[in-house]
Image (tube, rainbow, N blue to C red; front, side, top):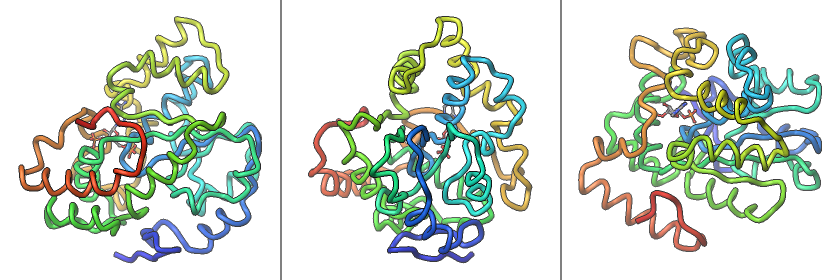
Length: 284
Ligand code: A3P
C-alpha cells in the first residue's frame, strides 16, 4: 500500500492526493456559515455526522435514511467530495480529519464553526486496529503492539494524535469552536445534543431532541444502510472481515492492551500531554 507525506503528515495514496491537500490548505474558500466536524480518525466522526444531520433536520430521520452519510457531510480533503463542495449550496456541512496546520487558511478570518470530537486514544487505537483489517487502503498491522509503536511515533494516517488534539484544542475559548468527547456522548447523549444545539444556535423541541437521540444510537446507525457503510464497495471495505460500526463502547482497550502496553502508552501520554491544560473524561 502506498502513502505519501504532506508537510510531515502521512496520507494513504489510494484515496488522497497531495494536490488536493495542498489546494484545501491554501485555496479552499471557507464561508462564514460553514459548519465543520473535525476529528482524528476513529474518534466518533460518523456518530457526530449522524447527530448533526438529525439536528439540522429538527430530528426528522428521513434525510439520514435516504442519503449516504458521506454525501450529507462531504469530506473536505477527498478529491471527489471537494469537487462537489465547490458547487454546494450554503450553508455547507463539511467533515475533515485534517490537523489544524493543514486546515484551510481562509478559516482563520471566518466565522465558520468547528465541532471537534475527541476520544480516549487507547480506545481509538483499538478501533483503528480493527478498522485497518477492513479497509483496503490501510496496511494491516501484524499486532496491536506494532500499531501502538507506530501510533506513538505518529506514523499512522493523519500523523500524531497528540499533535492533532493539541493543535485543535488551541482554539478552545473561541466562539466558533466547540469540543466534545466520545465519552461525553456515551455518558449523556441527550445532554450532549442539547449542548451541540446551543453551540449551533438551534432550538429543538423535546420531541425533536428525543428523535435525534433515538436515531443516532449505535443500534439505529447499525440498522441504517445510509450510515452503516454497507454501501461502501467490497474492494474498499471488506465486510467479510467485520463491521464499520464495530462495538461502539467506552473502555474496550481493557480487552486488548496488556499491562505493559498500557503502561507504555500512559508514559508517552503523560509526557506528550503535560503541556495541555484541562483534563479529559479518561484521565485518571
Ligand atoms: P469502535 O471501533 O470502537 O466500535 P469514526 O467514525 O471516527 O471512524 O469512529 C468509528 C468508531 O465510532 C467505531 O468505534 C464505531 O463503532 C463508533 N461509533 C459510530 N457510531 C456510533 C454510535 N452511534 N454510538 C457509539 N459508537 C459509535
